[in-house]
Image 1 (cartoon, helix red, strand yellow):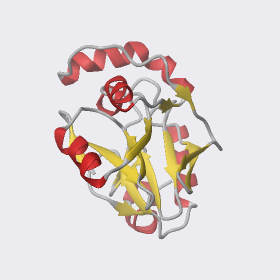
Image 2 (spheres, helix red, strand yellow):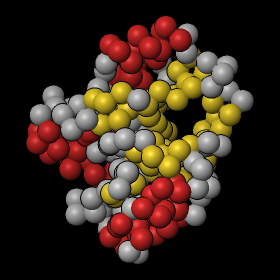
Image 3 (cartoon, one colour):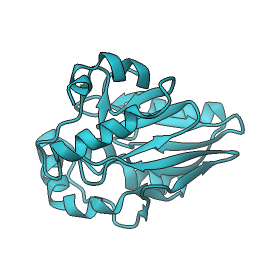
Image 4 (tube, helix red, strand yellow):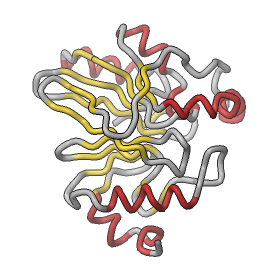
Length: 202
């Protein structure tokens, strides 16, 4: 995990024993991340965005060119192009445009990493294009679920009702799954299911 950008977004390098990898939420090019990839001898196969907010995908095109791999993102990202441009300014990022030549992913799709796969869940609420990635031992939740909190639903594309539905689906997963959130510390499904005050109220 690499905390990057003006609001400390968690960017992840997920990889298998066979050294195949993907980068999740490429907010900023970071020498520490690229050095880690080089040192571990990882082969990056794809870039994945949990949603299209600038603090999660600002460097997607740069990473795609660097590793010559596709960017994968939910098609509802198209609804947020104007918000993406505005938030680049608000967050102090160098202005750029949301990547256009990405591969669309949606509910039920799988992402292969060598001999392992991650299942895509469409988990809207924080954003229409929010997805979570479910593997055998972990789930990447982006800005839908945090330790002790949940994602904002008052931004463009946000919906309280959709967020509640997504949280209920996430909490139905195996309680032992490690949760890799978009911000803040790592947690697990069981802890959030029983100790997250927001979730216990829905």
